[in-house]
Length: 122
Image 1: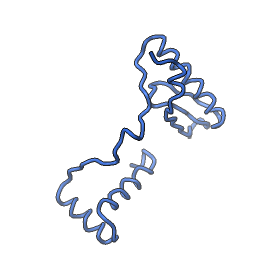
Image 2: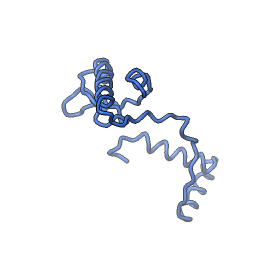
Image 3: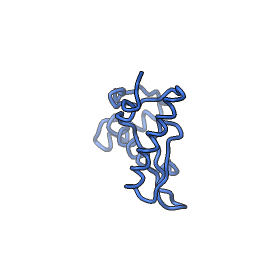
């Protein structure tokens, strides 16, 4: 059986969102549904999210709730197959040729550019 120390030692992702209306920050651990906290500054927020994570894990272990472990980067190959309309394939191939790069590099550029936009602008 995995212990609290085991789970506390895992590298869970922490999401930080600036609260535009109230000020301060909301911090959460996405893999631990409902594990979140709020703070006026990031330093305090990091302390609070560590405590929230510990309390969340203690409650989950006590109630025998299934605890998700963080996704490891090694679980992803960096490759996937994508089917697209021929017209889009043609457009991407032509634009990448104009840029003097491979279509793969051009698509990576487009995906990276879009993923850096705030969610409301996607």
